[in-house]
Image 1 (tube, rainbow, N blue to C red):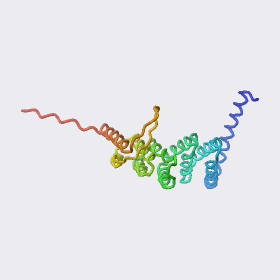
Image 2: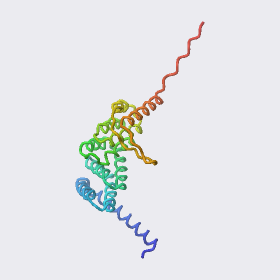
Image 3: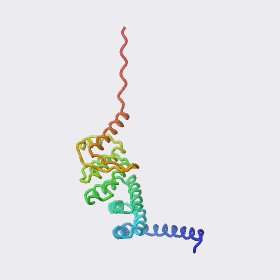
Length: 228
């Protein structure tokens, strides 16, 4: 049986090997690498062994985060929609890093995701929060696309993300939902509650209006002219 010291040494060697393999793969060039990553991602997402799937998808997400292009964004979103929480975190971090450097590329990938991903895909509920975190000027408009989704849970995520983003441009978009009676489940430490989309939209609109008022306070009244 290996000692703790021996196991640590093996762990360090495995990390050193992983980094060397990562560097070697990056040296292959995107044209050769991306088709292989696409096949590997599809295979990992199809695995029934969740532990093995997570191992592969986390490493794939880290590798994809060093690349660029439409296919890379699509693959990271596919991983974000998978069942592995660890892999979804890794994919989200990689997408966020890409968005800060190449926002338009990621934004276009999110637009494609809204069309190509099926209802109930977890990525559709995660992408709004990614946009709120990035905070680029075009994020409010893109979040508006999520408000039109058929899935009430996705709409609720977009409403919450709009409140976090704090862009007053979202106020008219939220106002349109204040008669939407669909119910969603909000989870918290006490077990959560059922609320309507209308209530969420109203609350978010009030938050944004308050933020807008604080950012642009009315000018102080002019002092009255003294009588001569």
